[in-house]
Length: 118
Image 1 (cartoon, rainbow, N blue to C red):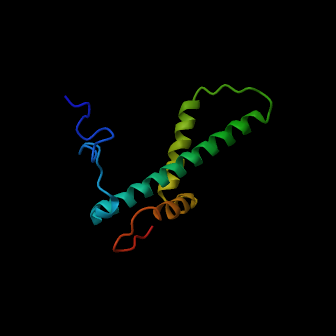
Image 2: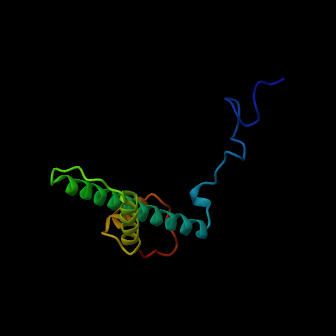
Image 3: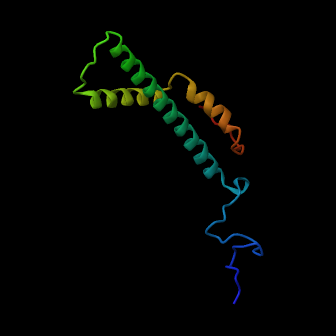
């Protein structure tokens, strides 16, 4: 009995199909466009999360300026409102951070036949 499992080990010629991934160069145009759209959405989500964190920190700091510890009975709802506003701003065009991230990260994706507009 062989101690080698098919496709795994030092003597294996290739990975089993479960672990094999097609190279990006052989993907169709639809897949490339999906990759770019996914990257765009991820960049926009990142910008929204970052804006939300900045706003929450600003509000928390502003509450400490008067020196009194303030109870926040609706703190969760306030945080949710800030997150939703930040996400909406990002999806509507944002402050430009997602566009810079997208431009830099899109260079790592394979080129498409037609240029995509942001």
